[in-house]
Image 1 (cartoon, rainbow, N blue to C red):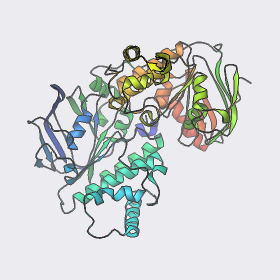
Image 2 (image 1 turned 30 degrees about the vertical axis):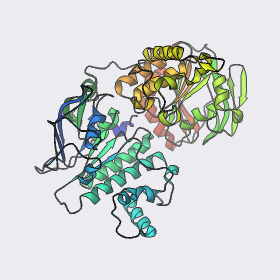
Image 3 (image 1 turned 90 degrees about the vertical axis):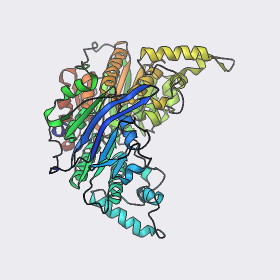
Image 4 (image 1 turned 135 degrees about the vertical axis):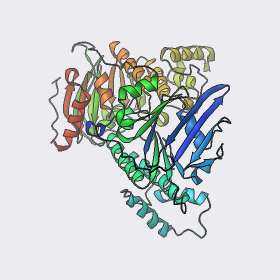
Length: 542
């Protein structure tokens, strides 16, 4: 997920001068083997006091292994050493020991309990550690937590249920909670600084949510903490970090100053070569016929929306969060109830109020949701089981499945879509983000759909897999598939789309065609929509 041009050009967070102080974290000769294979091979680097330090690398590069060693989940090989604030720390760390050293973690899924309220989520760690020495005064705790949150500019009702918060407010809550954990654990140690580890915290955030989160990160650093920022997104890394460490195949490729290193140079460090970025070529004329016509769609913040998509076309839709673009795939699939409007699929015209996923699937429409783990798959099942769910009936007779045939087909799909590992028995949630997404593409494209609705298709996907997914969409479109891509990644839209519709206040405010499709042009239309009185363009189909 990229950032708007004004944020990309911004200077990284200023490094606080340490005055010769020891690094907040220093790792030397860190290795870890699994079954004789080195996931980390003699990695050494340091995080200086008062900096935001990026950690980059493709899936399988060793980033997750390194974070899990710091969290106490894995033990490194014997030669490894660790210093925190200049003090040697014996390895391996016990689970939970990092917290006492002033290291706190916020992972991709945030570690919040959606069913509990803000207050419960905030103090659950304190209660688990037995810090409460007297019965809890819930009213006093609510006032305390509200004050802490407001000091970071986060105005939340402590009694609000976390599951009802926006994605960005959940992420900010998790970060403030982690910062408070650092503060609590370092009380009385005036020489020590804390370290906040942010492990892919932006994957499910809209663009403006990332801006808010980065403002919070800068606030955290200003309060004398350091941050280790783990991400796949180069734009984000370049916008927020002071220095970046890159891993490839478990080995250190180097640590560089972000402001002095181009995105192209970082990509070369990550993949080991200059990466040829995908650029879509023209895919045909305007006589391909309509795959979908939408008329008068209302619901989810969208008002009287009319547009169409041709066979073999990739149509992008974008805007600021809340502008309506992000709900359209779910409205059209019947996964979210629309209020009014009609859709024409081939010769069939349907009222949107009657749509449901089964009916749309039968009509040749499939959906790849933004949250592939929660909404697009069954994480505890194998990759092969996930792949074959839509077509199980084709491999059964008299109610009995044919496992050999299922395994053969699933292995073929894994090979065709370059899903790694190419093992149908691997558990789906154990795959990297890019391989999960490629598996979902294989799962649904095997059904030979006429229209794919996709939301944020490359969230949490590394730079190499991202190019593969672009190429897969391009190949499918050239074979006649229509693709509606809802995304807040302007670079992605510019690379793969034939047209892009920009939304503001629930309506289309601009349309860009191939010759005008650039990242900056899209960003200008999106942010310009904030000051426009949106007028829907005329329907080109009358």
